[in-house]
Length: 415
Image (cartoon, rainbow, N blue to C red; front, side, top):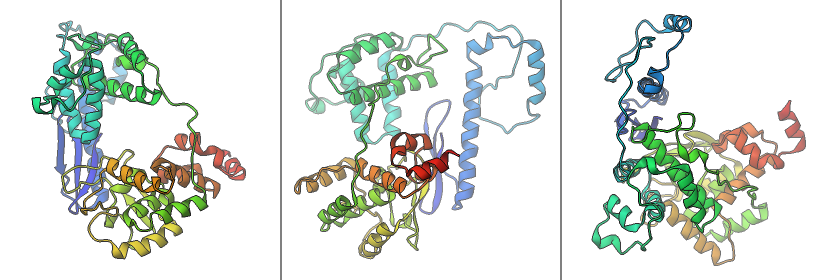
């Protein structure tokens, strides 16, 4: 999927090449957001076309003969001409005999993991990569993962020794049954097992996309799909009352950066990462709305927002806080760290937790976001509007916050 982001008043695109998996960044050579969005979508469609043509080259499709009458109805639908696409061999629909493809060569797990780690380092922030490496150490052992990841002898002592659960050589030896057995040995929470599942699912998805794994079952190509979801059920929604909101903001009175970040999460419903990536030009001059945009910081790190870009209404309580805060703000970032640079996520949370703990307060960034949603629902906002401003789907908002919608408003939404 292609993404666009603003860099020095010019829009850029970021996407992975559908054939090689290489991360590509390039200027769209325009400052017009509408044109940039059109170009982003054009790139996305071309990438989808290349990927589709590659998929049609798989033996399972070439060996499946389309009945002649049906094939005859498809031919007239093919466009007479199409823009050129960088693809070595476009596939045409044919009903002739197909030569069976040779058996795919087995891929060594260490080789696939080296390529996978190089891939995720381009799209994940460093601490996310370290988290994946930690999970792999629990599965393959510390020594093997350190060797694959290129950890130097000097840094090896930083990681505790862990024995290998799996000592096989090839990717295709990783079956759903084997992974289930591994998960059953983990003495961790359900949420952590979910993280392990997501990591292995992403690894197999990468291997399938780039020809490093030949699925044994084309109806269920990713073996991790067969595992339990490990979803945390009946998640409790914790939110702050107005009295608690006032208390939280008062606690942070002498720490303006922490205070403005908390106020934005409470009164605008932004995620922690979205809040810390806000810059001065994210705020409308009339303080009527703020823009959540993909950005690049001074270290050339991209924001990679979870749910894309959107505009969020600035409510009156937040506007009053911004009116007092913005004139005193120095630098680019709305929530600057002590050195004036963008605040790293975990460092921000750690600092906020330390300050709150001194006065016996334990609220989290997620609970600030819950506060925003429940207050808007109680005020009569539609689920659609809440979802749009929070960057969620209506289904997710309804799942977690429907109980907080006023009954008369809920009845209106069902009509």
